[in-house]
Image (cartoon, rainbow, N blue to C red; front, side, top):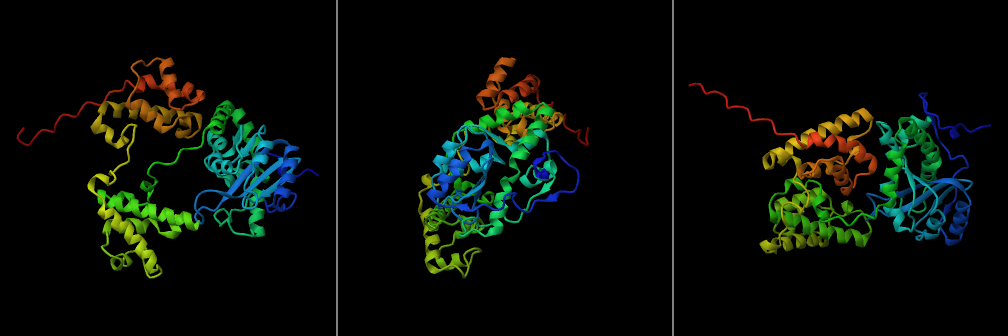
Length: 423
């Protein structure tokens, strides 16, 4: 009998609950000996390999993987514990010439890279769904809409650093890769029908070739609620508290938000309490916090208060690109007109093609071209300009023809002043 899950035909029928992996839940691979067997099995398998990783976001410090799931024809499904097997280089090497199938690849690639796994080619089912015009591109929605199966959604945000991992979690993890290759095949056909498969392959190649992202500059500026903090001295308090929290979270291997919330950091920056007693009265520094912790936070506040003016952070981060678009009308009305025209043209084309604007061309690329356009608006120069900003060939071929008219747009003439009563 043919397993219905092996068909990849889109369906409009009610989704069928997918309750168990077809070969059952595999044992967790947590030793070098067991890993050797997995490597051999997957090296001998055929076709693409489905890959997924589970992190403990919100529980542990950083974004490292606490479970890696794989599935390949001829090898079945494997669940690997990176705590017991922290170096997966041999597995990565065994799969070096194999296409990896991931959902939202850029989320999982950094933590897989830390383990020694990096693909040379991949297929991203989330990005494929975006390019194909699906309105909902989460894995559950895609499996349901394209393959007709309903995945369990209950364990996506659990603490994957828990050991031993409960059986329901392992079942959920195995099911995440159960149909990933089926989904890949169905989306490949959909993209081919729509004439977008080459676009997708260029996008996938760019993701696979991209270097690891550099460390974020001034990550403390991403503190939630930071927009309420205006004065440089207060911003300095945010920085000191954030850095102190980050060190404590790293040492304890817990999520920074579990050490001190962003809301508490902002409250302390706005109030700038003079002592521990005043600090304890603020939200987030209540009775559950011990004296030693309060003294740690107060010391960070005191350091910020003692900084000379020249060492205080600037209100905004240094940025080499154009200013925020909301400021363009005042700073450069001609650039604002160019941006408005370019956005409208890109939006219309994206709607015609049935894909999100940001996948047709990066909004940052559009802003940079409109802020400082080349003097030569020939197709060759515009194509080169877009490519230098990271656009792929399929994007430049579609967007470059839109730009000459947009980049010659002029601001609308100012309306004449309204007549006064005397007139």
